[in-house]
Image (tube, rainbow, N blue to C red; front, side, top):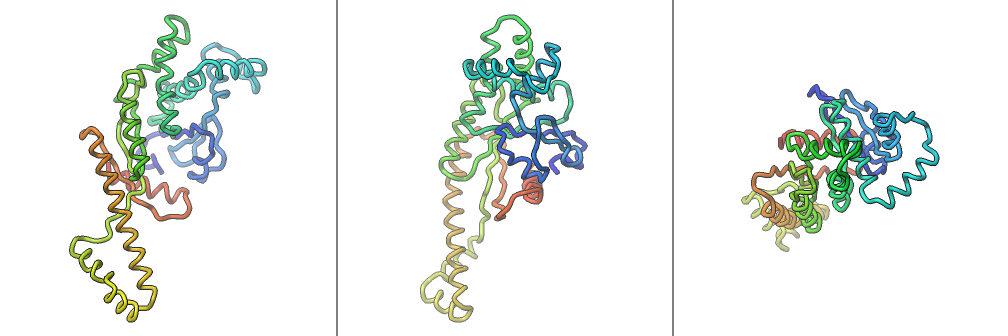
Length: 286
């Protein structure tokens, strides 16, 4: 789906544990270990305790037990007391998949705006706290990986509405800070409404909406014609309002930053079919 036909091994990871990714892929519940859900496409959900166990097994040669027991309780205490621990386990796991070349492409469904910057800053913050040792070595390559624009980039997804645009611009600004590491690769605008009419068509539409013409149209075609006109007027109004927000977004971004558009799908349900539509639209934009 996202990778089929391109010959690229792709991993998609959900970080919030909501289970939405498995539903979208129609793959059932996902686990910490990546599972192939489509040809060349694997999916997983993040679990920081599982990430800790994997780290201990790989780096400290601690046996991978089904339960950490007292160590897990100690981890919970440390993670809640020391900011950045849970974040480093999330970013570190995904960075490890890239470093070890397990996949050609790793796509991370990151948390909301207020949390993603903290995750990206965690490796640099821990790197600055520790001058030597194994943890310093691990965060060192992770900082380098995140800071390499040829390897890592953040795709900011927003909608053509006032608050999402404000949050998107704020996030892009935060990503430009030196201590974040990963920069913005592109901005994707979701749920963009199509333009219903050209200039000549809109003139005709406006005349049809005039009371006299509207009444004649309803008399000839039935009362449903008025409902269609009202729906079209609402769509035109929404399109114009959203166009203003799109203009504000474009004006607030670096002109060289790609801005891609995904149209409103007008679908009640989401699944593989909807994902294919989104992928096709993004492919056209790219």
